[in-house]
Length: 236
Image 1 (tube, rainbow, N blue to C red):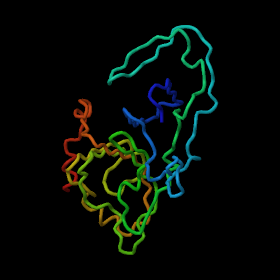
Image 2 (tube, helix red, strand yellow; image 1 turned 180 degrees about the vertical axis):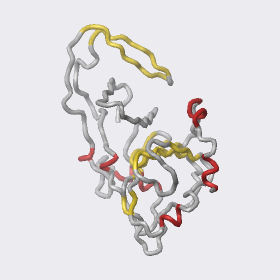
Image 3 (cartoon, rainbow, N blue to C red; image 1 turned 90 degrees about the vertical axis):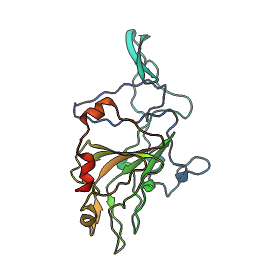
Image 4 (cartoon, rainbow, N blue to C red; image 1 turned 60 degrees about the vertical axis):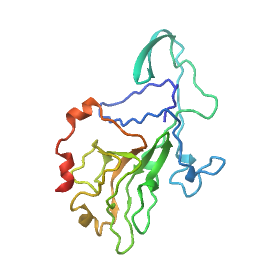
């Protein structure tokens, strides 16, 4: 989680990386139902303060020269050249600072029957929410059907980013896939997924879901690579 206005640099040890970036014009917070009136996370929350990791082992760079910084404003990147290294001071004042929360620290909440998607919510943003689907036990009622029921998102567009594992409700899911379920359009498990889920005890799936309360628009690049047969895969 990187606050707006925070100068940062990403370095990777290998080229084998995948990034799913969510940007917001407002703060991204933990859901209110998991916090006390003073802002502390309560015991029934699927995570706690111990799971929040702040920056460690930072180094200062007292250097002069030409240092190129890119600032993003209204969707455009503007280059700015600094005469001193931007990392010449380490620290912050107040409660706004970058931190890490790993999806692997999200403790799923399960039940005897199918739990609705808000039970997976991790963050609450301006006009959107972020949910984490992690490895977990399935519903344990003797007659439970683990596969999610068919439904429509009346108030939000739904984006799913498949990180790893096998996703129960959809066939042929591979790592790195992204699906979009627009607001108001019914969707649910692929044909055969419901029957396949009966008797299953757990799922190894790992995915991130973003529900937006304003319409999403595909980029030109996404329209070029879109699977033209995708919509028909739900009618097999």
